Length: 101
Image 1 (cartoon, rainbow, N blue to C red):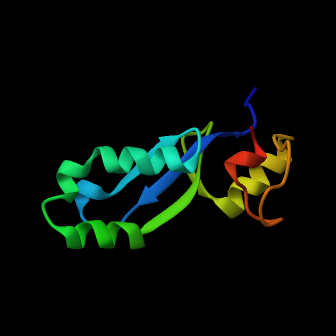
Image 2: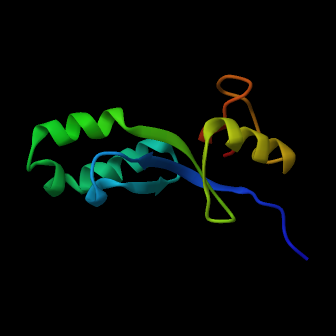
């Protein structure tokens, strides 16, 4: 029996900068994801323009139990379908980590 796909944790997808920086960062909350990005500062310090570009090319979302990155909109659909919401701290159609735990 296949289990339903659920939201596991917050994620930030960074794309379009370079192969080296095309990544998904995971954390309990989105600020933890950005802290992980900062941890990789040695890559970013090579050129400040990379840091600026990286900030522009990000999508906040979530990682699912199927190991998929989903944006806040699809995240809300999955969380509602699985009764994962404990509150609604943001827009009705966007999921925030505060809505889950």
